[in-house]
Length: 220
Ligand code: DX5
Ligand code: ZN
Image 1 (spheres, rainbow, N blue to C red):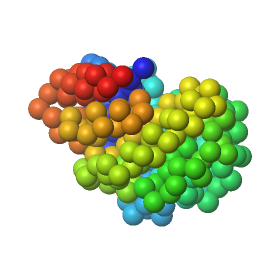
Image 2: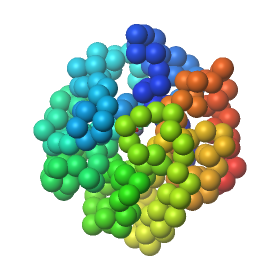
Image 3: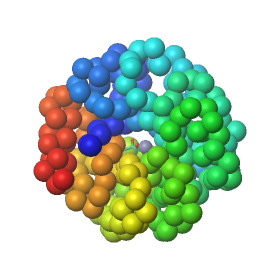
């Protein structure tokens, strides 16, 4: 299963509702919503109230990526706002297991992410509890950065570990995904692809999503 999750960080924030609906028309599978607190990363985006008002706009899965220092404090708000999958960072200040359990207890799927400098083995103790692992291919904080191809061995290792344990976990890549880079990530073992500038910067976002999907599919 290949999932394309356009990152709304690159959309026109003055008409988010329209842009969310547009992504549905363009064939997006999910919507990747980047939440930044200006502390965990040097940028601020949006919070749960925005997610809540956008929830009625589209039935697309809300894939919420929390780049915040204390996710545990805000999980309830993001779940109540209508998030489907909540991903937070291994490098945050909250207790990892408690945060995963809270996400699940609120009926959402849980993802755990690693920044480029974090070894993938760090998340192995939590693997059996997770629905998704997000391997960052840029330093989190901003859209439009270059894809870090040297993250691919982390994805391959993780895929092998999941197979060894018989786990069918989603592996997401985020940062610099484009027609030039998606095949490399798919070959390494990723199956959920976040793309911000590639999709929203395309002349036809619809064609771009279709092309990204077929490039990834060639690798399976
Ligand atoms: C970066 C965010 C990404 C970002 C990706 O911190 O987590 O989701 O929007 O943007 P592109 O696809 O432009 O690299
Ligand atoms: Zn993201």
